[in-house]
Image (cartoon, rainbow, N blue to C red; front, side, top):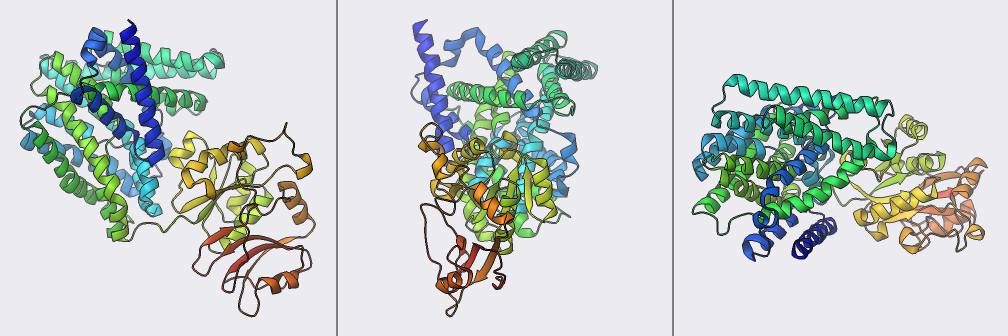
Length: 600
């Protein structure tokens, strides 16, 4: 018992280290989890999951995959499908079908898989997902059209691909057990009906507040697992379809608040994924059966060099993307969590039914995942630069806050040619920013929704300027790892005389103060109310910064400087500078000074 406890603790620690390492290097966590499992299992033999878990292996994996699929399917909102553009619709519909067929053919011809297993591999291999796409986009930094297309493809195809893979699996199991087409349809119908009923029942309980808030996460998990188990008991192997449908039903109910449930499910999925992938990778046989490794590599090469380019090219025909953007999309399609988790569960079940070739499913999927993640992470940025669709160094600014002070700063930066994104969960402020022509995002910048949906292409700095001191500090901590410690700033909310040890945040929550030590949000707002204005002027040899100050007074506050090459400098308590000729200065000047020349 002690030995088992130590092994389970080791798995938890290794899963955490893999997730942390992925966060540090901005690569998909699945890569490090699978590599850790391979080292612990086939390479060193430290962990044998079949001996460790015994007869509990299959039910444990089944329940974990059910929760992962439910969490993923909750993100599919039908309202979002209408606005994703022609390219994304093509990629997640006939493009996905083309991918499935070509991957199945490659697996059959190159790896010798039977056609049923090959089609199941094709269905699993057509799924990407936001957990692998989003970290890669942060490193890749393509232009906005490519980034939006790839991100939306991952979000939409994640649950859709899982649903399609479940249907293919159901068809194989029905065929192997000698079931007729009628039994297969009954299995599908049972999963759909139970999923819909479970989703509506849970929505009813949540909407009527019949479950107290502190029990809602617990109740949701129990309901999902109950639907999974009941569906499997009524019609064998229909449980995965039931929980997928249930997640889609819950995710599309506008009258049910599920943000806290999604946060809980995300945390739970992170834990389950970390354990699951280490365990499943540890089950891989090494060395692989003769020809399997070569066959897997050939299938990966076909997927990378033929399947994705052909399906992406077909899917984006008639879209607004140019050939360079389409070429980059044709190169980037890393496989992720759904493919790995579902393939392992399917393989366990198919092996118990003695389906020929079932033992090859997991190794083939894992080779495809590792190959696409490694190759595309290493090459995608270079390909984007070669195609000239990579964004320049991220010099844009995210401004957290949408009150008049933040909007005034955002307008001044935008007028100077800097890309600006205004973010806040204050609807009135965001609406005013939109009416002023500013790019906006409605929501908290530290939310899961922001991680998946906020477009950060070209954004490389954070100015935390909201009136809420605690949220400013939270945003600073969140984006310090995203942009770098030296590229996050905050506008003080407290004057020097108001700050003392009992009210000061710890140093880890702080960032350089914007503009100078005495500037606070309240003082900035008072100055603007009394007539101060933000002015933008290009300096010259005859009208430099000393002449600017002489013209507008010693009280002038320098806010930003933009070099001749377009590089933005932010004035802060730790970064003072004097702009030279050719620079554009953005400064706060006293009232009555209306003569500066606005930068072209």
